[in-house]
Length: 96
Image (cartoon, rainbow, N blue to C red):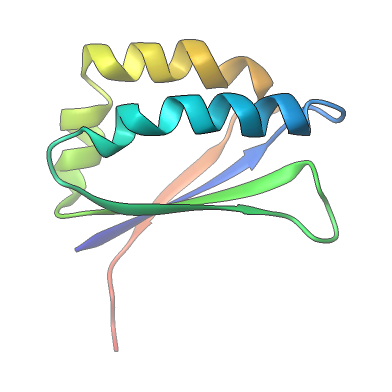
């Protein structure tokens, strides 16, 4: 299992529109092979900063299967114009 951690800096004032659009985009990621689960968290101190946590069966499910898919192009079209600067995305595995 691999955890994708994406810090999503949403443009100030766009939080509500981002959340509504994210709700519409969720079925895209849910439908991808290797997808396990996801959660979207909103910053407390910085309410325009979000953290997306996605569990994948293996890293390639995200980096190849999702990111190189036609579905990802739709995901980008729906969501990426909300970000400034670009999101920071890293992957983690369980240690203990």
